[in-house]
Length: 180
Picture 1 (cartoon, rainbow, N blue to C red):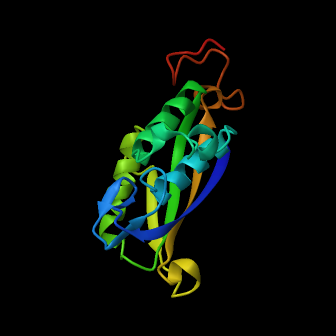
Picture 2: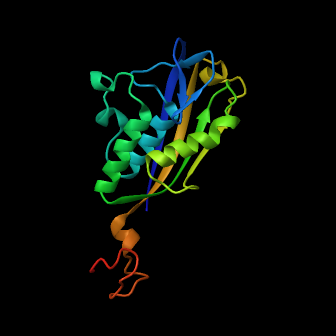
Picture 3: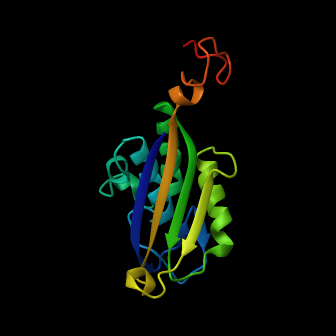
């Protein structure tokens, strides 16, 4: 098993849409950034890349590259999902927290988790999104920005399909028989 953690923060600004977990949330401000500045998805991407030891979001999607200007972070997440699949990883689960004083996010949490899960082709129940405030403290508490933290658990496909500690040598089970 491989565990990764991610963190992201963006400043709130006038004239921007607020996108969290791929969901457009009605609010008078949005997050400032090169892409859509979706802090939740950015934290998830970093958690996934970290668990696989594949660097970070800035290496894969630099904010100096014009092709990422205004891009949907959900599209970036889809790319990371394919990358993990190519590297032989299975996403076991993702747990994420959005830290924002306002707006209240309870009505949107389920939809955020669904968007993230769909982008990664995960079954329901593998993505959890929570939200909290900082009780008026710090930059998020003052309404200057929003941050997010995420944790992801990956399993290598080799370990997922075959584990010599619990499988017999003639296993033909999980993957139709991997021939090990």
